[in-house]
Amino acid sequence: MTINHHPSDETLLRLATGALGAGPALVIRVHLEGCSVCRERLTRFEAVGGTIIDEMRLAPLAADLFGRTMERLESMPSTLVTEPGPRKQPDLGIELPHAMRHCEIGPWRWLGPGFKWSKVKIAGSPHAKVMMLKGKAGLYLPAHGHTGMEFMQILSGSLSDERSQYFPGDLDEADDEVNHRPVVGEKSDCVCLAALEGDTRLHGFLGRLLRPIVGF
Amino acid sequence: MNEGIQKEVLPSPVELIRLLDAVARAQDRKAFAQLFAYFAPRVKGFLIRTGLAESVAEEVTQEVMIAVWRKASYFDPSRAGASTWVFTIARNQRIDRLRRTRSRTADHLLDLSDEPDTPPSGEDIMIMAEREEEVRKALATLSNEQATIVKLSFFSEAPHSEIARELGIPLGTVKSRVRLALNRLRTLLDRDI
Image (cartoon, rainbow over all chains, first blue to last red; front, side, top):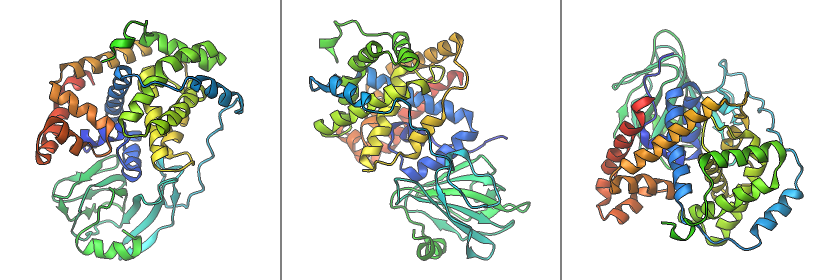
């Protein structure tokens, strides 16, 4: 699989620093699963964080902090709580990425002719604006812009817009300067995972269509 | 920066890896005490620098060190150096605290799922150490302004306004300066991807 569209350096840096919101972070983690180049880039940005820790000015600690920490450790069970099993997820007709295994995912719901969506909830981040979208082959999505960043990862099928074509594994970032009209490829239905950053809203008909149904 | 502490003998990156390994394999308390002495004051300093109140920073530091103890077996020295790994734990614990939730987030769960399958070879660790060394060199090669931009990005949720203040440049030009700094960092880091 050749990946042609990657997250920007800014986005990977924000993931590394922890400044990227939970929704966009999930979409980027899904991209990272299939993209070793971006995994390597993220590791390098995280290594900058390691350097910052090494060079950090030392803060004085309470004298008994180490003792209290050891006490807490002794009162804990010796084994690490194992990861809870993946959530039961509805059959959406595609294999979901590993990074989404703890998300609460809704069934496909009708959004328009040949156009469906599924709500994706992230534990601990109830306000994250994340969803999966599914369009049938050849569908023209309504033209739209965004008040902020939109992150979209193709899970299956393909999409194209005025800027480029996107295939499985591709990650598209669209900022407030992008106005686009995505079209689903002719060969098969397209499923993508999309997140809007913070209070980003969609302009135009798509925004008016989504807002009352999806809630953003 | 740390004039006061440069006199003490700081553990080398290799030594930090050895200490984490001793914690992972044998719950070695002496090794943990050394890790605590090295990382706890730095992690707390980092957390304060990101804007946490002193008392909160200390609580989160304790949580970070507890996670270091409990997750030591998940540390994979072929992927990251000890300081980088501790940084990611501090970052995640800080996010958790800010999200005001006690439930573990996806980020943590991802960490847990990444237990190394096979012990890394000496060669793997050397490759990682070289990579981390390159990152250090790249940072040192950046201009002061560019290094400041990159570092401020680690301290602030909305670094652009802080960058504007720190560098005395208009907010409108920050975006392009950040882009320039990251492009430069990328050319330095990408040499051998």
